[in-house]
Image (cartoon, rainbow, N blue to C red):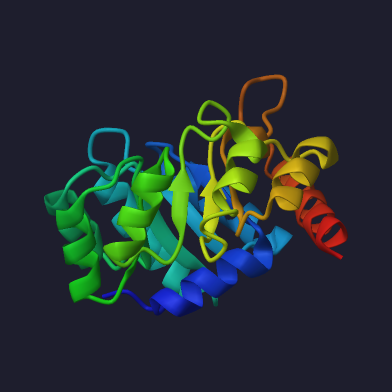
Length: 223
């Protein structure tokens, strides 16, 4: 069962301003990456449903988070159907993120009062997702659907829309400044947050430093 309500998740995403997006088949790597994110100050984490047995990795990772990382809200991304949604809800996911709008997924989440964040690429999709109960909508792929200009354009007729772009977001001042000025709720960032060393292994200290700097940037740009 989800530990955090949909409102708690939505507010935390806005407070941090950044949601890390990550997948690895190795649970040991996932735990260390999650801890690096936590140490930097992040309190929401999107585990991507991409590899075989991804749900088994998430189950172990979520147990670790609930036991060791107080306040960390664990979600699952790249979910495409109601059956997979229900599977992850049973494993305690605090939120579900999808690259598409699927009404049956919305129903599965709404029954359990779990936050559902579908991927949209038009004003019509965003409005429909909100009708289905989405408090935050994901625009994906963020750069390809129009980038910050798209967000700004949507906020004209839909000023209440809470938008999270994923794809085309970087943890740099130049990039974050554009998205925040456009009025995003938060941003999703993947591989650009997760530094590797010269041997190709994740550099957990560098990950914490990168994320910490990005979080400071968000605060600075919002002030």
